[in-house]
Image (cartoon, rainbow, N blue to C red):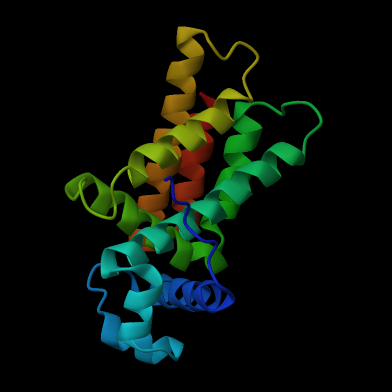
Length: 188
């Protein structure tokens, strides 16, 4: 008989949101359940019960981060009746990504992306690949001839530039320089 996983309880959703807020400021690299549980008003046992394991909690946190990313991509698509073009969408993405209030989220994203590359079998599995696919799909929808080889190369370059500029911005805090670099790339 097939089984289906129950929808998360209100308590599980509440604790996930609290854990997500905690992870945005503390990261995931050295996540320990005891300090996390204390900070969010729970216990390690409750977290293990609700998320099955520490890895289950990490997977839930990564899914929550990806939900923020997908929401952004949907909002950008919904803002335009006609695809606005790759460069316009790249600038909108950069404005959103580089905003000071999103630095904790972007740091979390970079950490999760990197971890999925070095621990591909763990709870991070497929996070990097999934985000690449999500972003390339959005960028593809902005191009007049998306299936052309040159179109695929251009959107890959734009994505690489956005991510590289983001990593540089997070490392240095230099918004002016990283924005100028992105603008220079888009102008070519």
